[in-house]
Amino acid sequence: MSTGGLDDLFGGYRDELPVADEPAPPARRRSWPAWILRNLLLIGLATAVVVAVLRAADTEISILFVVAALSGLRLVLLAVAEVRPPPAPKRSDRRGSSGNSSGSDAMRDAVRRWERSLERAQADDDLYARNVLPVLAELSDERLRLRHGITRATDPRRARELLGDPLWAALHDRGRPRLKAREMESYVDTLEKL
Image (cartoon, rainbow, N blue to C red; front, side, top):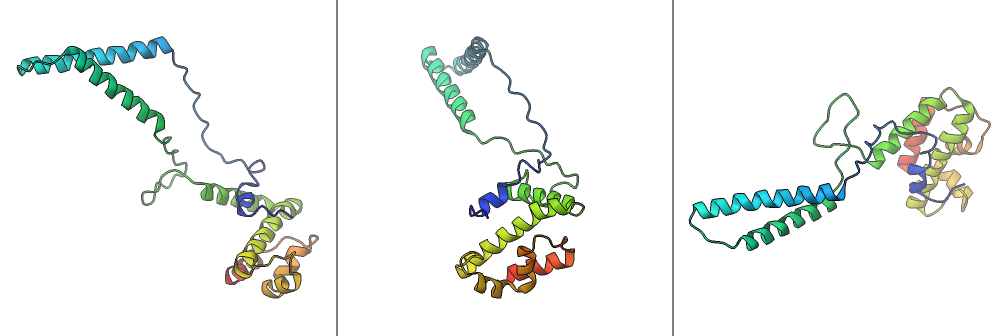
């Protein structure tokens, strides 16, 4: 039995259940000379505009000062662009967004993997025994540990008392047929009441 906790639970089925996201676009390679030339042109054009506006307003200012100021501003903007967070992923559901939540997070991805795993396990007893029962066992142990300071392995008698005989039997009888939705609901209710 795994003792890694919820991190293993949320990330454990990644190889088995791939999340269907859009592939990332290939990274564009930039040419350094073209990048430098582009930035020098930008600074040169901005300098010409600033100097023209200041001269039109009868204000004298050193061109070197304007170039230095605009170069510094461009460097700051480039530094900020390097540390900004990546863009939020596009929503893949067709219902539209509810509220102002955009993209997805690890919890949502984990729930999607569990849903797919449960759907596939409905038709395959072996897949059910490999995927659903270990998750239910891990949740049971985690809930017992958080609420009562025990696990099924450390204090089996007390754990059986707290979980109840039906859930205990489902977790320990690997030859048992798949659980029905009603049974699964009652087991989850039992875990929530712990």
